[in-house]
Image (cartoon, rainbow, N blue to C red; front, side):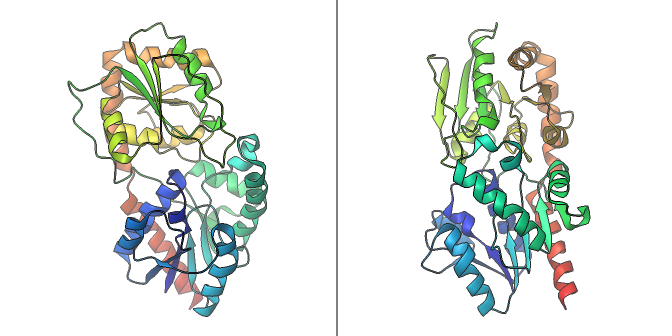
Length: 350
């Protein structure tokens, strides 16, 4: 028996929970030895039914994970536990943990104090206790190895891919004259500089559309919009997101720090040309299929946006390369790699 910690179904769906959900879906199709357990406060009921999740216990959140989940595992003779969303029971050893990035160390001021303190306590301990660590990029693997003093062979890179819910439409006459970004209102996402760059554009007639919401985890930046040319949509579902990616003139993602960054890939799938910050994870994920800018330089973000919008050939080239690039990333292939890691650990324990 392999147990998946499905606490992620009690949390709002962002990149971390998306990874957990998509990998879990694929593993359930690949293997017949998996069960999923979660606290009772599940918010994604349809997904829980689809995956046959077993809710149990009286606690929620960290109390469930640190107290009731280990008791369940003890009762079932300490099976291998898979954790896909940055947390895990502190005192359990027969497990795989996933650490998506080390933002709580690299950008501590972006998080609420309690969140930052808890994760800086938790991450190094679950990393050292686990049998294997999964992460989402070579960049994050190197960071985890260096900061926690963990040998590289204990850490495996499992790439993200595009959500199965992103269903692109044909890019044609319906294309809108707007620039799109998709992110939480987290200081690392660099929305203030993006807005400043947009407001200083020499090109007129475009709108800036920001999809994404504030989160209690982050010290959200205060975005003050005094322009009818900027739309703050808040959280949007996959159907609306698919429409936005398919219709946008340009997708811009000038984040300061990422472990991976799924939205640029989603935009590429829909043929939308992409401008991203010149940071190692974006180089790793986007390759030569994006236009790169210095995220700390508002003028360079502005220059990147104008360069791509003014050059039809460049936009078409980025669109074509992006559609090809996204084919390199697959939830199925990523889950198959996780399944092989499971088999290796199970064989070692026998």
